[in-house]
Length: 339
Length: 164
Image 1 (cartoon, each protein chain N blue to C red):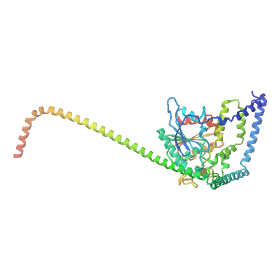
Image 2 (image 1 turned 60 degrees about the horizontal axis):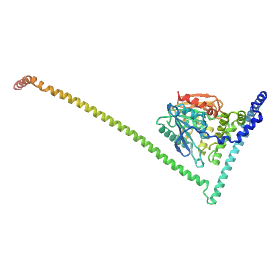
Image 3 (image 1 turned 120 degrees about the vertical axis):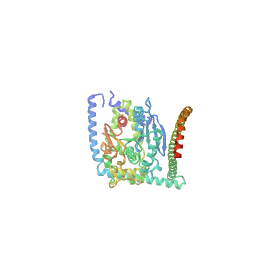
């Protein structure tokens, strides 16, 4: 057993080696099959000994973080789990927008970029795809699928649909206290560091827990690596294209329009066409985490109230990010894929 | 928390949990209070304004020095992005045309296969007919001799009918 002093010294020594900087994340072998502006379509082929076993999936990752959260480390990777089970994966990495991208609208992302990414993935696969969205990547995917027949069926992982059920985030993102216009006019793109800080402050005790957790398990090399990988991913926040963010916050957080349908007052008009999730006729599956403080299960499973096709829901144990690292997402997705 | 003494470890763990619980309750009150929310909004606006002012000042300085400014680079990269968009739209059209051509080629190929099959079938039918004809021709001389008296009778009957 280590003494308090030994433990603290070991932790300090470990941190002084800057483990997050030395670690490489997102190492599952893949190839880039298409690029548009900063967005990249990454193809992870099946690594099953007998080749492809299931329909390929198209994954829409969130814009506010790097995609590597689904590919943190060997043995802690959603990508590795899916491909080893014989599921080829096409992953949409939205990339890091620059100042020149601040005028990109949400319509452009949903009706142009996603359409083209799906098209190229389908051509590459030579067959129809299933779609998976994670967090805000799922929200955009849901809007896209209500307007385009791009996939056979879809799964949404921790995807906010009822934004007013998003807990503290919904309290903060109100027109009275969140000056989104002033922010976008001043910053251009909404800064990733501000988003990261906001997420940290959603649950401040989580910050102390993070350091205490490392201190407690400093002897466990596997835990240390995972800690460093998550730290690396978390500090590498991505800016959100300004105009797209303005529309996203106003329509989703301020007005909660994904629960509205054509004919309702205040329905979301995106590029002159209403956004109505009831127009989506494909089968959908919503996966939520019971301790998710960013997208609580109520916010995610609201999909069942508004989606046009059949919806099944599943609540798993864990938090928003933890379920990506501990294999819960892989397990739930593979269950859905094998249906 | 593991330590030299298990009891001390248990106690420190419990103390930490109590402290964390208390802090969480305190934060809950602070982070959703109107004062905090208002301050957060003002701070964000202030940061955004400061950033915009800074960028404007940098741009003005660079322009005065006749050095390409951030705005110039943004304009340039936007042009590049627009060009990429146009190229991708053309690529989309080419892919759609290629799909249509492939579909037409498939249809043409199918039609050719069908017509070839029809020709083969017609040839087979013709061959079968030819064979039947040959067979009939083979029987014909024998049949001709056996049918001659009957033909003569018929001719005599038709002569009688005409004279009547």
